[in-house]
Amino acid sequence: MCKTNTKIKIEGVRDFSLTHIFECGQIFRWKRENDGSYTIMADGDCVNLAFFDDDKGSGSGTLVINGALSENEGIWREYLDLGTDYGAIKKKLMTGDKVMATAASYGYGIRLLRQDPWETFISFIVSQNNHIPRIQGCIESLCRQFGEKKEAWNGQTYYAFPSPESLAIADEERLDACRLGYRAKYIHHSAQNIAKNGRGVLDKLRGESVDVAYNALLKYEGVGPKVANCIMLFALDKRSSFPIDVWVRRAMTNLYGMDESDIKGMKAFAKERFGEYGGIAQQYLFYYMKELNDTDK
DNA sequence: GGCCAGGGGATTA
DNA sequence: TAATCCCATGGC
Image 1 (cartoon, chains in turn orange, green, cyan):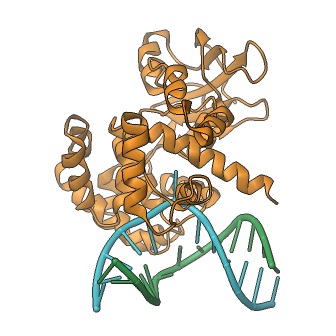
Image 2 (image 1 turned 135 degrees about the vertical axis):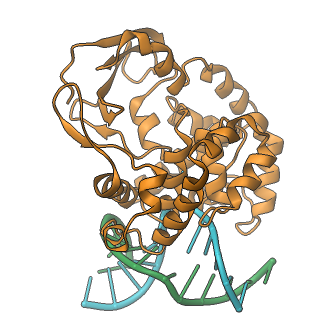
């Protein structure tokens, strides 16, 4: 837990749940504390997010960002996408769609974070055909093996997310220690590729069209349609991206009655029905489908 | 387009 | 203990 000497307090936050945001699979580095708050070590800070619902489970309340400087409030608002009216988006998505009405009610506090492109790039190569607990372990190992050792203002030491340059020159033994399996060579090769021109080549894709960004991402080893869509959705502001993985495919099959092999049809369906909010719809479906699976047992 | 190997661990049978 | 599964991709 972060000892706090600075904090930002934001009142009147709506459609918000830390659990939904950090457990819906868009990010793997925030740690849940026993009190339900979440902590991360980054950029020399130890930051802890706590949310206080006005009424339990309402999604409306006060957000406290412990360990953050007040001058950075704008950065946190942007990261947490607080400027977007998710209530209005949910309303649109839920209209005339009972499946989505149930899914979005269940994951009422999901928000899409605006993440760092490089971190997202590596994280979702790691994520492919993998379990979330193991993804978290792999990413933590990568930080520990190749990230810069740092000390936060509160004296806690931690390891930063490794740079493209450090992964480009990673030696095999230490890469093996991260238990990445066959993904290790994807990460090594793609890091070498990105290190040549710097991580800015990914940041630049934010300003490009969906098609340009998508095709640029597909050129990297280990990045296929699913991973490219995740990077675009979580880090490049391409909110219409609709990544189709095992769970979303299952949702489309079991809940919408589509043919499980018809990926093309699912993409077309998402574009037609969810449009510019495809990515948000995808998160509601993913989170809800996993819950259905858990309660089934 | 279809098929299958690739790692490894968590979960299920 | 064995089989199956996992936010897939690359190569054939």
